[in-house]
Image (cartoon, rainbow, N blue to C red; front, top):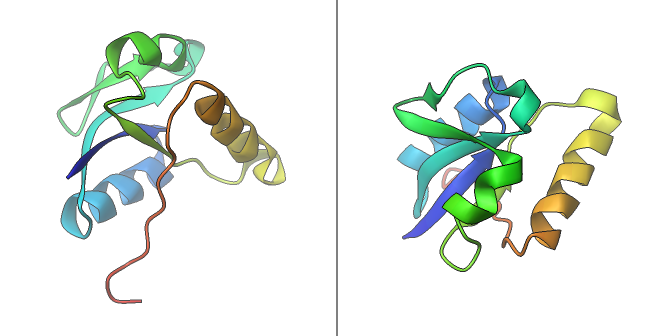
Length: 100
């Protein structure tokens, strides 16, 4: 089972957390967002950490990531965060429902 950090802390991240927890071989261990957007320190009993600090806490050799954000800026934001996570060394996972 791989351990995953979710980028995002909104409704899309809630859905991703539920799906990964209930229908995948992945274990969500934390959420991350840009530091200035942290509004809570925990979500679903898991820590919410600043994206600027995620490497130090959840290194990419032990954790994977999923970008779970909405459609701001016509997906430009999602693509930018995906690329930033890749540049930090994270393997980005995908989720496909077992019922698909």
